[in-house]
Length: 246
Image (cartoon, rainbow, N blue to C red; front, side):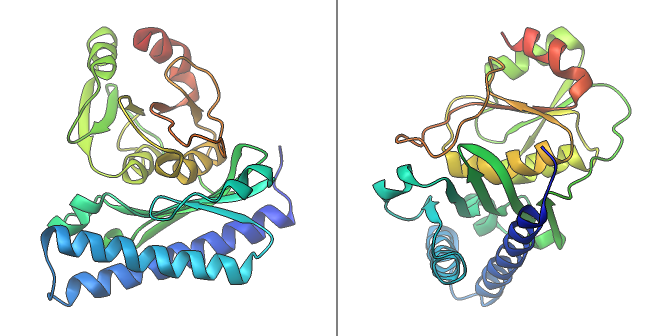
């Protein structure tokens, strides 16, 4: 589906909100008054409050689902739902690493349609629509979780002659694929809709394949937001990678 003016407006808003939340998080961390778990918790709260208040003001007819807020059952009757992770990669943020991100995604009729992923430490924000994918030469490289690289990804890398690259945030891993640092991102073992909505919107806008591990579509704004697995890859790798993951 081609982008229309409404998609562009939504993407511009997502960029503005994600970048502002990112600046708030950088300022909080630079203050040096908090560290560790306390810093991560404060960052989650500050970014959540900013994003939800801004969306309530700027998109009052849309619903919001945030990792840090109570789910409003009324969202299930809405076609447009902003699905946000105010601070994806809380541990990485608190450790001073760059691989954390702000996710501001918009699902329309269950499809991740627009949004932005911002990596404030890299001064990088990528929007959907508008995302593009850089070339990725060389042997297969698959982005995986730092803490729990999935067995399926290890199996796929062995079968396809590739290697695994660990990184923090789901958004950071997805943007690494867009930047040409890896050919794919594979996750299994636990995620929620807010972990993947904005990254999936950005990846799809750039022409990448996005799906569950079994190749089925990712569906958003369900009653249970548990969405535990994800594949993002170059379209030419789709068949071989999904077969190796099966």
